[in-house]
Each structure stands twice: as C-alpha cells, then as structure tokens.
Length: 306
Image (cartoon, rainbow, N blue to C red; front, side, top):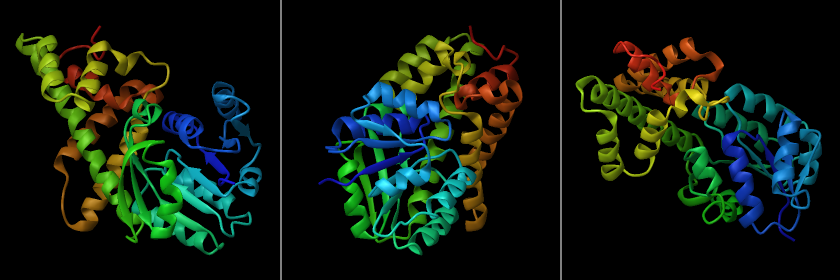
C-alpha cells in the first residue's frame, strides 16, 4: 500500500500542489487536508473530490493517520507554531516534508524537534508562482538525508514539479539559502519591469511596445509579470496573488543572510523600500507586483494604471 499523505497549509501554492498530488500522485488513499481556516479545506475537498480527499479537524487527527506530512505555510512564526503541534503526536517512522520559504536557521531548529521524535525531516522549498503550482511546473529543492529525499521524490518531478534540485545529504538550511537567493532574482525582475514600464510611459514610447519586447526576449516569468502590471491585476484582486508581507519576509531573510555573510544586496534594499510603500498604500491588499504602482506614483502618475 502506498504511503498516506497529509497536507497542512492551503494558500495559493498549497492548493495547486494538492491538486497535482491527487491527480498524478498515484495515491491509493484520500489525501488528508488541514488548514487553520477549515473552510479552505472543505472548499478544496469539494473541488478535488471528497472520494480523493479527507478533511481533518485537527493536526493531531491528520498526523495519526499519515505516513508523510507536507507543510507549506506563510512564514516562520506560522510553521513554528504548527510544528509545535505536530511534535505532540507520535511521529516514529513518519516523514515531514517542509516546503515553506523560511530562514535557514528556522528549518534547522525544526529539524531538531522532529528528529528527536523519531521521524525524518526534509527541507523542500519550491520555486514558482501559484499558476505554476497549479500546472505542476514547480522546481523543488530537496535537502536532507538521501533516504528522506528518496521517500519524497515520487511526489515531485512529474507530479507537483517539472524538476528538482537534489541536495541529498547537504545541510537542510542550504535549500533555503538557495531559495532565498533565487527569490531575490524574482524581486529584482519585478523592480526592473516596473522601472522600465514607467519610463516607457513617461518617455512617450508606451508600454505596449516594451511588453512586446519583453514577451519575445524574456518569455515566461518576465512576460507574466509584465502582463500583470499592464492589465491592472496588481491592484484589482480582492486577495493579492503574492501578498506584500510575504514578499517583504523573503526580502528580509535574504538581507539577513547577506549581513551574516559579510556582503550586501543593494538592489533588494531598493525593492524592499518600494514594497514598504506598497503596504502603506494598499495595506493587506498590497500585492508584490504593486511595486509598479508605487513607481508610477514616484513619477507623478496614479497608482492604478487604468
């Protein structure tokens, strides 16, 4: 019988990852679902099929039934609180696969808690936007003992992911160091796109031609974020696609790593300052791509482009 899986955390990324586990993970038992807001679990279960999923009322209920436990939560505080609940249960022989974007020191601390309970712990952050999670096109970074990596691998490439970066037998924190550095590339990409589009508009070129160039020269994430900016998606959503607080958390962790390593990330510092202004302007509705709106305001334009 295949391992029983339990998923904790149903944000934008988690929902897409669960969808692919159910559809392509060769599960022979329903995927267990838990979210602090239970209605999210119920809604996802209804969407994926109640025969393929099972909503549990508590973390303890899910852990008791599961062999492999996946977690992906918003920040270090949320995963620390969740892991404190998980380790109250009998974990002997179970595998925890932690996919959140957190500080490397946090994952090492969590690993100690889990290992002390006789379980395995794998750090497995993922690269990609929610649309990539939904399409099973993420890139997983798997760090920990090779035996743990092999237990988790059947659920990554070809299921939740299009590929993996194998960091078997490396310190778990290295996976998150890579994830945070990688996320600075995305942060700088959005900053550059916003800068370019504002200049295109102010100079009289117009954003249409710049977007065509971006789409031909840098298809993929560049073109997708360019579209989000020009369509007004960055301010029109009821709920942000990538909340500004999460983007600032990632930037803060990257800046912390840089300070500890004796280097600097000046581009990230500039982008983080723009993110702070997004939060001031839009509050909880602030979206990562709202950097574009802030840079429009700095150029004497409205935050909204339509």
